[in-house]
Structure formats: C-alpha cells, structure tokens
Image 1 (cartoon, protein in one colour):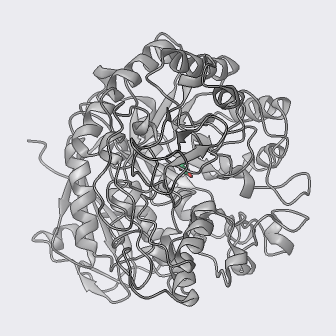
Image 2 (cartoon, protein in one colour):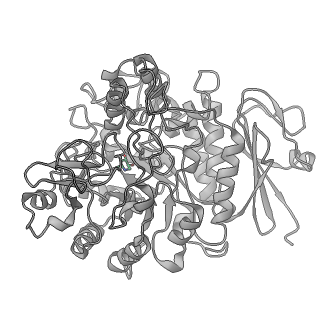
Image 3 (cartoon, helix red, strand yellow):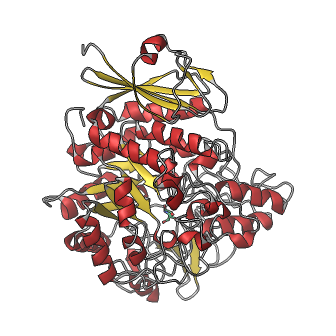
Length: 599
Ligand code: NOJ
C-alpha cells in the first residue's frame, strides 16, 4: 500500500464488543444482542465506523464462545438469528459496519463435525481433525504416550486421548477445542460456505481467530522443550507451510468479486513484520491487516504470568519497526486492548485517581496517531481499569483457572499462551517450570490479577448504579466496584473525560487524511519517558508527544522551539502550558501541526 492508495478502512476505527459483558437486556446476568442494539446510539456518538463482535454463536462456552458448536446460528443466551438480523440492520442504519469473529482453527468438541469425526475411525469426517495413535512403542493412554510433546495454550498436553478409538486428537487450546485439519479440502470448503452464508446475510467481514495456525506441518514433529515439561510445537503450526495458499484460496472463494466494503483482520500470534507484509500486501489477496503481538508481550518474562519491567524504549523499538516494515506495502492494525489483554491504563499507564484520565488519554493519543487502523475495546474509551479480584472464585476464564490449578499443584505446564506460542512458556511463580519450590497462593493470585484475561471481561460500566447498569441480575462475572466513579453516564457529557478524548481522536482521523495516511517517523528512540513521532502528508507535518510518566519532562528535540510555537491540534490538559517551552506535564500528550517544505 503506497501513501497515495486509500482504502476505506485506513480512516476507520473499529470497536470490539465482547457480547457477554456489554449489555444485558433480558436480565439473566449475561450480555446479549438486544443489549447491544440498545447501545448503538452510544457507539454512534463515539464515532466508530466498524463493530467487531466476539463470538455469539452456539457454544458450550468452555472458552467463552471461542469453542463453537454451530457456525450458522446464535447462542440462545445471546438471542436469536432474528435478533442478529435486527442488530445488523440497526448497525447499518447508523452508517456503521459489523464484523464477526471467525473461529476456524478449531471447533467445539460438541460441533456435529467433531462428533461425527470421533464416532468411528472410518467415519468420512475422521480426517476433518487431527487423529493420531500413541507414540511408537507406547501403550495408548499411558502417561507420556501422546503423539507429540506439544503443550496446549491452556495448560497440559495438546493431545486428548479418546478411549473409544484408542487415538488422540489435537487441541492447541482447550480439550473442548479440537483443531480442524485444513489439509482436507472438504474442511476448507465447508468453512468457505459458512463465510459466504454470513456475507450473504449482510455482515461486513471477519476478524479471524488465530488464523496463522491453520496450516500445520502434517508430520507434526516434536518441539524443543524450552521450559516445563512440554515441547514447543509452534514452529510447526505458526505460519505453517500452506498458510498463504489457504488464505489466498479463502479470498478467492469467499471475498473476490463481492461488492461492498469488507474488512478482514487476521489474529496472528507470533507473526513477524516480514510475514505480515506478505499477509497484508493488497496484491496478494490474503487479509487487509493482522493483529501482531509483539508490543503486548514486552512486559512478559518467561511467560505472561511472570511479568518483567516495561521499558518505553522497547515499545518504541517494536512499534517503530512495525510502522517502518509496513510503510510501503501492507497495513498495521493498532491496539492496546482486547478481550485477552489486561486493561492498558493499569498496564502502561497509571490507574490511580490522580492520573487515570491523563494516562488513558495519553495512551489513546499515541496509539491512534500511529499509521494503521485503531481498535478500541469496550470500556477502553471510558478508561476502565483492571479488576480487584480477591480470590480464585472471582475468576471465570479457562486460561486463568487452568493456570491456577497447575500452579497450585506445583506443575510447570510449559504450555504456550495464546498471546504468543513462540515466546511464552509457562513457569510457575518461584520456579523456572522444571522444579523448585511450590508457589504460594498469594503469588499466583497476584500474577493473575495483573495479567488475567478476566480483567478485560468484567461488565461494561454504563452507570454508577447497581451492576453498573449492565444488568438487573447478578452478572456472570462481578462488576468492578470502581464503576461508581468510572462509567459512561458520567463521561459522555464531560468534555475532559476519556470518552470525549476518544471521540476527538476518532473525529481527527475522519477529518484529516494525514492521520490515516501520513508517513511515520519515530523520534527520540532512546528516551525512556517521552514518546515522540511525526506524521507527514505532502507539506503538512504533525508532531505527536506522550509523557509516559508522572514527572514533568522536557522534550529534547532540536526544533523544539519551532514546535512549541506551532498550532496545538489536541492535548489532554485544558490549561495551556505557560512555560512556552516544549515540555510535558505528568502523562501529558500533545499533537502539533505545522507546514513544511514538501521536498
Ligand atoms: C484467540 C482468542 O482471542 C482467545 O480469546 C481464544 O481463547 C483463542 N484464540 C482460542 O480461540
């Protein structure tokens, strides 16, 4: 993609809805589609262009809907197909688009495809999944007899033994999420049929769950044991041998020749910049953009539950490399949050009363002014924070619960985490994953409080009232008690709120082509407190500054005094800076504009 070629999603902002936690219209404690409809005016006011719905399909909910048992219906807990059609019509009526989650690396084990597959070794659908006998020379079902040493993302082996047939099936995620065998053309064609079915119904595209894992090396070799007891299979399934072929086939079968403006974004743990350029090169017809994971793993130690100090210079190096790598060809997606990540204001900002609003707005500004398509995760636009989970009974997420169980049993599970199977290896607090002292519960809970996916999944905070206005019943996961101060009702009309700031950022993108398409140049790469970069389109140049700290800091740019005299487009302090110098107050952000020689 060169700067001169524009497509609609370059100036769009996507908003992710996690249906379970967004708004509960029928009062059963679980969010639903009619609840979403009731909040579309709010989303329209925010100004977002596209809504991405996390899965709302029928599901046993082992992994909160990412385990799908029927791809062409709606789980009754969320409503009906008629509710979906109404939601889609109401979204379209407001000039927005609706994108669905496509989860086709795996199905639920309760999907009829898998039920047939497991019914007999001779079933025509047997080969729709990965079935293998025990390791040669070992008895089926015996400890260590799994066909490979791969660990699953949610602790334990990636293989589940099936007593009835004496074989194992592969599940990179939970044992209720068997992996589909994309080598089988019938699997691919069934998936494409389903995708066309939704597009024909009017949906505007797909966010593709772990889509870079669909092509596995059919030999399924053992992986290297990095820590813990399981091997790292990711070299054999992350961006595997036929991944580009499969995505090109999907494009040809599903998207080619369709009128309308569609969006495809591939979730790709472990993807490199070079691979992303191939995936998003418009000439190659694969996907429009990818979610990469590098920047959300910079504070991970041996795994996500063992954090290490976050360094701003690492963030700049990483995001700067992605900006440069996709500057001429391809396109970035931009995100801090989603349903798998802890809340960004608690993670890279300061969620204390004093600095929450400033740091949330600074983080938003820095992200939204990068080149790429920004994604806002529900509640991020309110500055929602991590939750004060007190005991394991407060958690709901399978990854968190399984981690807790393994940790408390003193097992180093050594499994990859969905964040990035390439880099993340689980070890337990106080150990490297292969022995050592048992962790204490306090340490395990502290790790979960900081990184658990449930931080993102507490109910949307609509009001200061009971259950944050999310539901009239007790919600499936507790609301964050800070909803009394942090909620949509309090923020919508407050010009200095996080919500109002997101609104302004979205409006800036819509009004100024430089935000979507301007060239990006990172400045001050070695500065540990100031994030600084320019954008440039023709003779227009913008400077974006963010203070990642609570102390005042000068911005050591050679042309600082020129910039200090330039037009201030947006900041997060309403009082002007009296100093006249280019320095930033605690967690301050600023965007300046000037005109330069266009040479
Ligand atoms: C990535 C999704 O974002 C995550 O929530 C899920 O657990 C895994 N893929 C498995 O579908």
